[in-house]
Structures are given as C-alpha cells and as structure tokens.
Image (tube, rainbow, N blue to C red):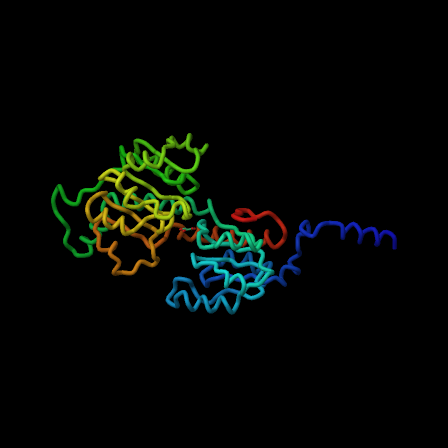
Length: 353
Ligand SMILES: O=C(O)C(=O)CO
C-alpha cells in the first residue's frame, strides 16, 4: 500500500510537459489540415497519432479560396493543431473559430508572412515552418530564372511556339553568367544553396547583403556589402529574403535606379518584395535588362497582367519547392512539428515557441 502511494506521489510530481502523451491519448486530439493536397507521407505520420480532419478543397484549385474558407470554418472548431498549406492568411476569425485549445500552427512553407505572428504570439500559439528542406529545390529555380531571364527564354520559346525561328548570328542575344557579379539579398539557406549551385558557372564575384555578416559566406567566397553597393555592382540580383514590413517593395523606383543597365532581377522570395509597377516601367524602358520571377503579386497572376506583355521577363508559377521529394519532406517535417508541440517537446523548426 505504502509503495503504491509513493509511486502515485512521485508520478504526480512530474510536471505535465515532461510527459510524452501516448498515441491513445493523442488520438483524442484533432489536427486540421487546410488543403486536400497535403503529401500522403505527412498525412500518414499525423494519422498514426491524431484524429485528422482534412479540407476537401485546395487553396488555389479550381474550387477557389472561398470554398476552402467555408470548409475550414466548418472543420476547424476544436482543433489542437493546424497544418497550413499555401499562403492563405491566418486570420483572427480563423483562430477564434478554432478555439482556445489550439496549440500550434504548422505552416508547410519556409515563408510565414501569411501567419499573423503577433496574433499567434498574443494567444500563446506556437508556430513552425519548413526551412532548409526546400533550400536546394528553390535554389534550382533561382538558377533556372537566372538562365531563363539571361538567355531570353520567353522570347525564344515564343519563337518556337510560333514556328518562326529567327535565323542569324546576331539573333536574340542574351547575357553570360560567366564572369558576372551575382548579388544575393538574404544569404540564408536558399541564398547559400543558390551560390553553391552557381559556383560552377564561373561567376567572377558573389556579393551579399543582409542584417549581418554570415559565417557561411567565407566558404562560399561571398563578400558582405551594403545594399547600395550590391545594387550598383551586380549583374544578377537574387532576392531570397523573407517578406516583412522592412523588405516589402525593397525593389522600387529608387533602388532600381541604382542598378546597372544590364541588371537582371531574380525573385524566389515573395512577390511583394518588388514594386511591380516600378519593375514594369524599368523593363519596358530598358532601364534594366530582364527579370525572372517565381513569385508575383497576386498569385496566380492574371493572364492579361501587363508584366506578361513584356518580352524581357521570365515568370514561373511559384514552383520553388515543387518537387516530389521536397514537398514530401516539407509535409513530414510539418507533421513532426505538430507531434512535438502536442507532446510537449521543442519544435524542430520553430518560428514561435
Ligand atoms: O516555402 C515557401 O515559403 C515557398 O514559397 C516555397 O516556394
């Protein structure tokens, strides 16, 4: 009797956050997945532990955002975790609807500008994202955009489609990456992976800018410079920074005026890093050479958008992380963050903890 009493006392003195919940206990917890195209690998991990409710709509699918919003309002009440796919904003209304038991928003993306961080913080809700696992895939797209813009893929593909190939030695000539200066704004995981991939292209100089020097830059032979120096010296300017109040429209009329006439802007961050009106004018007037964008405002870009009328722009439909392996890795990482948050363990990739 005494032994049993002692055991009960010891067990009850362990703080609850040190208890890993058993699967049976976590099955009582509801996890909501915000879209129907979450990778099966991530879903499997979640379903082993929790009761999972998944939206039957896709954020950007044919059904549109509205149907999904309505569906989410129906399935979200009582959720302990939200697995958030795509960049649909986390609103106060959604959080209220979920209820006070909500512990974590796990966004299946590196960027979290859509996640309303101050509101999550005020409510004590954790936030995780999926950086690093997507760096190489996004860097491959950065390199593709560099090549696509520099070698005028838009005009050249148009010739192929029209069946009217320009013949001649001086036809649609592009720019070399060899011997160029590449400036990276934001030498984080994606910026670093881009520089690594470009190293084989005989780039003359790599420059980077940001809040502070990065220890990783040394091995990459990348020089830390001011934003102004990067803008005025680079042939290629790669945007790989998160979207914040500070970086919104960092590429604008004033910053474009500092660039070389042959400059090529590449954006794999977020559309709103660039003032698109200013970009349009600069490309139209030949103030800079070209642009390659994986991200735009809005997304999808309407097919009659004036940027699409320009020959010197190469636009992809936000496919940075869109490979089978990367999307699966992002899905599993997001699921593991949910398990950690709901079993009292530190998040693997925290934004807010
Ligand atoms: O993960 C993100 O934030 C992306 O936009 C990937 O393309």
